[in-house]
Image (cartoon, rainbow, N blue to C red):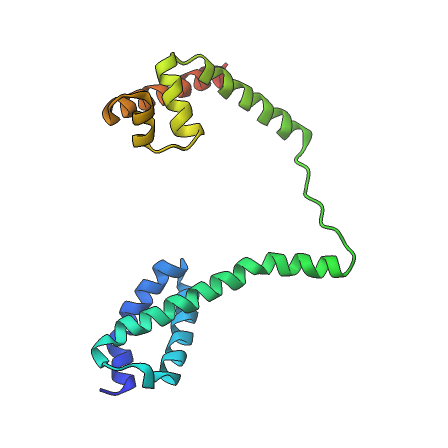
Length: 169
């Protein structure tokens, strides 16, 4: 089987994979084209035509990773240029009213959490603030996963109600 017929047979499936891997159609198209060029240049490394799709997908995935790595480095390169020019990039300071609103919202949330019954508060803090898994929380508290889920749901509901009341007033 020749390269063109292999490409025609498998390019759509690999393109769909690259949309998921790259996150958008434009990058997926670019990645697929570059992967096809690389595959053509290294066709001698393909030992069995039946493995072409997986081989091309592997090449395309590597190209996608390289693209993301380059995109991730772009802000650092821009900062490096600014630094070479002797300029500094200052972080924008949020307006005072935004900082006050954020502090008030943080205080409301802290107050709502503190008002929870102890069992609900401990589950909420461990699960949502400490980012422990449900199984870890249940294990540390000596309760079933179902009980942990129930308490977490009730805690979130109580917090939401208290925030709605405070913000609605």
